[in-house]
Image (cartoon, rainbow, N blue to C red; front, side, top):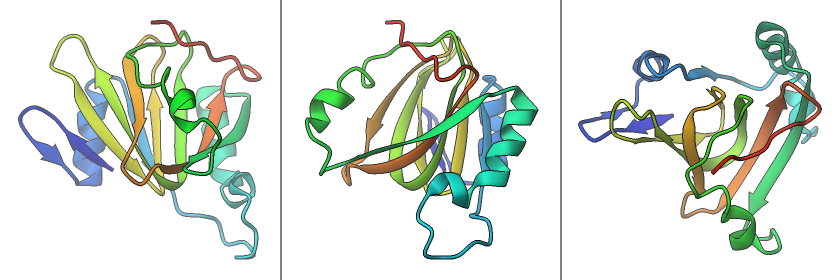
Length: 156
């Protein structure tokens, strides 16, 4: 995880967690569980971490979302994510593969960007203004976690 602000770039995990905590955001860094390496299902590879997260924050369900250059209509799919918005529920994303960028507008300070990559969990709390975009590689596989099954609506 890398955070880019107007004043600095943060690459240390501890500094990143501390910085994000000031704005109510939450981060963890996961390694896959010891399972058969031929298992490609991210929900299986990270099952215990997902269950701990659900218990800790009261989340109910999880699924996998994958976006890449092979995704039909990728630009059209990404278009709504790239506009600043918020949700009435937390946006919980674990990057299982690839990379992406979350932009955060904390309203009390200048906006900043969070570059997520494989192993990064980010919780963007409800009502936090944000947007999402892919990096130049245009490849990400995320585990999405929801409080309801799933209820997630962007408010622009």
